[in-house]
Length: 163
Image (cartoon, rainbow, N blue to C red; front, top):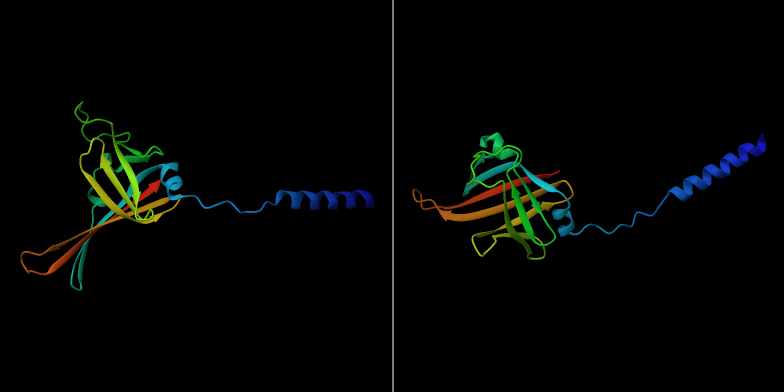
């Protein structure tokens, strides 16, 4: 019986130590994180700041359900596909289910630029956060309030959830 107990302990130790592996996986690149999954908008907030006064509005709360199920798929070939999801808001032939654009990182992968294919409109956002579950994009505009003459900044924050 002692021999069986010792054999059990030896096998347990061998199994325990051989099951352990070093956790030296390299962190994923931003391209890997961006292209690994689909991204769905989960929050959209606009904040207007003038001097020490701020006002925020939750744009996501005002969106229609058919807009909230839309998603984006970034691919390693530098294209992004915008998909209207299972529920389209306008179910006509002139409103395609999917549209493509191109994307690129700028400024040491801290900015994301998306451009219409064929040289149309483009926009650049700051990547405030990008990990395996969440992407936060920020975009700011500066302007002058025509009523007060004061400088105002409008910052849009878009939070996406991976799925």
